[in-house]
Length: 345
Ligand SMILES: *Cc1c(COP(=O)(O)O)cnc(C)c1O
Image (cartoon, rainbow, N blue to C red; front, side, top):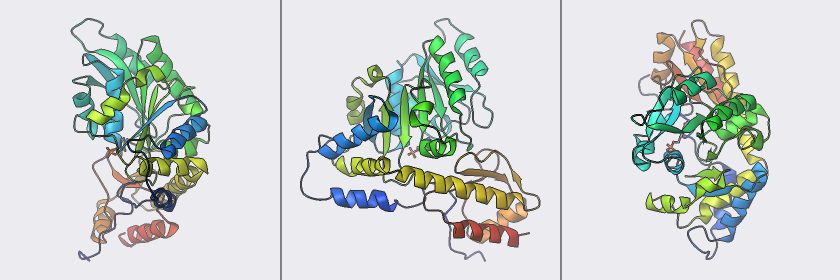
């Protein structure tokens, strides 16, 4: 049994491949010659489609990954002596190797405790106000993850409440949206309602985990903060010369609700997986399954048995075992995982 082939289906939402729509868009962009570094017509159209999607005149930049999107956008909100308030489980804190501090030349992350991965306005305000002397790095940005690292989502009113506290104190709001579309599909609201209308200044909009190849979009709703951002991207090695292959994917994903189809499918199967696991004796589903992540405390027999049967998943995030669904996850994958879990009992 130890020779079972490794199965990465639920290990992360970036273990899947590239969705057919994104792949096809790249193939279609692969004809003839185009201006480089984003000066092409496809990139202009993709940026325009973001403005329509969010119903506002935002500034849009494309980078290769989430770490750079977060780090470079936070750096544009802060001076080196500023600080960024984020949750203790935030990706910017736990999984970016100090890149936000590095690219901002030292802006310190201030950790707020979170509940189900979400920040609380009272805690945030306490962190902003408890020191105002010049010996302390001044809070200048608040970073929210949507959906959160623990699979929960912020409701529009919760985002507005946090942004209101931030704005009162001159603090800008950054949203880590590596799984923005999963949250958006789950909430069923308009993109504007959980971003600029609630007070978000800049969104890092995740493409890779949704099913695209190597891209995240940095969307500035507050255009003043986007000043010189293209220079930051270039200096950080994040300016793609054949940009059209990235922008063609965005154009396609946003144009015909492809994002919604993939996000809904991942969210739906995550709930199925959680329901099935939750019925097994000894299994505890740890957090509400708002989007495409399931966190479960599995009895040792199930955890070991699943790993022996080849299933790969992380057991160090969020105090349990984490199972992620993506655009590529199928009903059959979920059934196979559940059958194996059942067989471990
Ligand atoms: C995956 C992820 C990112 C992006 O990570 P990269 O590996 O740098 O693309 C950012 N934030 C969150 C919450 C994530 O889950």
